[in-house]
Length: 283
Image (tube, rainbow, N blue to C red; front, side, top):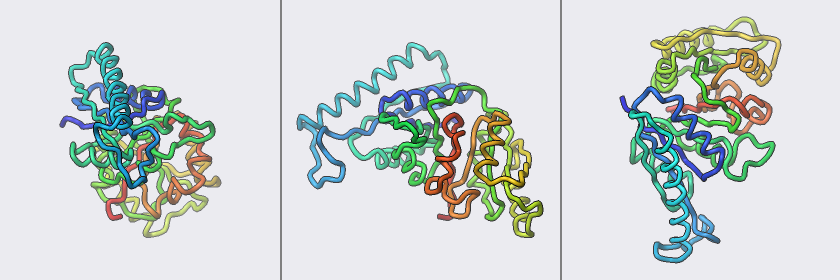
């Protein structure tokens, strides 16, 4: 099945790295890549009541900059690209980045959003920019893959999936993870980090259910004890040189909400390892 992949861009180095990463890991699949830029008129706040209209100088200038930037990327890509399986389309749209991304995801039936973890401001010490965090939290009808600037493009051989086994999963929540692992010939490492050696009855049941949900993909179970979850995940990923971390963003996840806890700040691995965020479809 042909994949439809949305790549938001603000023309930053981070965004270009995400674009390159996506085209490389899906080099063997038929894909349409939608390169999307959401723009605002100069001096205009997206929360203002008065919306600039097409034809006004500020609107047209912003529109031209957006379209020109997208055309340059495509021109460069066309010169380098020789993959007949890939098509590229550009979308330049006025508005808030989240609203634009949501709109394109819905209209184009997007399978995956791939974006840099930081934007054009590239704040030092900040692993995730505000647009990335908002997109990961609010775009709930398809997965979002965040690509750090330091991430290098290579074959995905191992995906780490941390879990507490305290919640049950549904097959459709994990369908993209199964598909990605299968396409990449990657193994899913299900990682449980907890000082308790023994699982409760409900945790054991959830573990069995998780295995059923991952049928069709290669996976293995791993348990670390005597270490806190943050350090456990980081040590596991670094020691094995894992290629990706995958999570489901739900209330009772492995480390709570990854975006509101210190997890992202403490997990230095996210400066190098891509993060795949899927969603609890019951929320």
